[in-house]
Length: 510
Image (cartoon, rainbow, N blue to C red):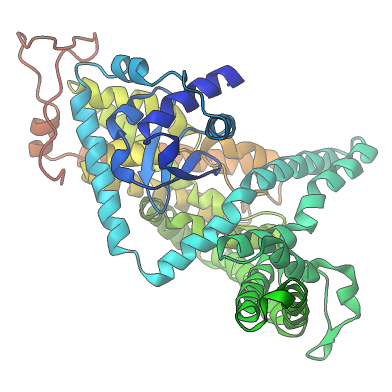
């Protein structure tokens, strides 16, 4: 998307979230613009959802607008420019918001509203201290995803060239490009951890950087010499959390005149020593355990593991807790070069795509829901599932369950392949769906890995479709959502494939 289009989207979004005065923070992850808002009641949710560039919204700890990969970075940059230098003549979103909805829009909007209410209620029920802490830990890793993806694709390209025996000099260069960031990943994790938990970011990075310093090989702890990188991202996270606490404690007891000298010294000294003589060893054991557990799980229980992981991932996405798995994925990538869990979890999206296709066919007369599916399905194929989750399957109820069944079937397919010796991994965390193909890795090469992963996707599509088509709707639900509109209804749309207006979406959808 060009800068002009990105700016137009940013200018359309700005007034619909309450204007510049209502925005406290702006950030983005792989697909979502994340806004810290002073007053969420000022958000015009209906007009925002009607913007063509908006794929969905999520009301979480930040207000999140799903824009999709690529677009989100450009729009975020333009929005920041608008906030830094607001223009009085910036166009509002009135025209797009008025032209996007059709006469059949209320049904889709009501479904989306119901999905948002379900999401909000679930968030309230699950706002426990542990889950809040998991979300904050996830926030440490989300900003790292673009670099993980880029380095992962470069690593996959380097591996493919090495396997073919082509261009050894280029392979060496690509390996250096892909490994540079990964070798310093602990520093970035420490920096983001301190920033997220209220410390000085550079102090968190300094303490975590001890873990990857080559000279730690000369340090002996617990009767063994340490290994550079021992403990990985788990150790970096723990070291930075300790640094935050040390910094807070020191600032409370040190006179302000000495703060600039004493606080950084105490934080780095004691935080670094704790990392060397405790955290690196403990975190190393934890990281090794994660690697052994993932390997054992696929080797001995691939079918069951695939069923459970693929079937339960959509509820995790619904609760926003799927981000908490990023540290596990990152640990596996550091240890083994790829994460074998991500391709299995990605099958949840495949089940949902198949489910959405079945809903599209079952609700032949509901032009509004069908229009929502048509707009959201391409994003779903690329692994961006929020529009389908919150706009279609979750508020409908039963289709959300049948989508999980499809995900479980796809996960079982990939899990069985892993149990038979054809495990598929991803060299980076972030994408899923078709977007994951360039990141695949496995013991038998990219082609074999792509075949297994593609087979899982097809299984998820097919089972999700069949489960939804035959079991996703009761007769009462079909009567409610697929009732043809009266022929004389004023303004009723009459598309060739759906000659009728949507029925109002009422009831609980179960």
